Length: 104
Image (cartoon, rainbow, N blue to C red; front, side):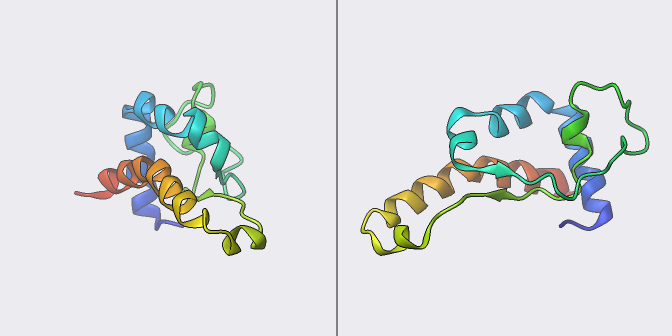
């Protein structure tokens, strides 16, 4: 979970570049593999944001975890290496977006 100052910067980046953010997290492959964590999201709109913003659910996020379920048996298959490589490639644009937001 990023510190408050970083969350503020990430929200600002999402607000300014929501199309880029949505292209990443709403991508078919991303959605098939990952779940974007919403358990720690704010209940209300963050200060300075319109509660009626169509992207408010993204702006309410306090952490930006992309989780992927894998059962234990998957780790015993030779295909796990390719699956992990492919999954890292799928999540990398989100990591880059978040890092770009906090690089000041």
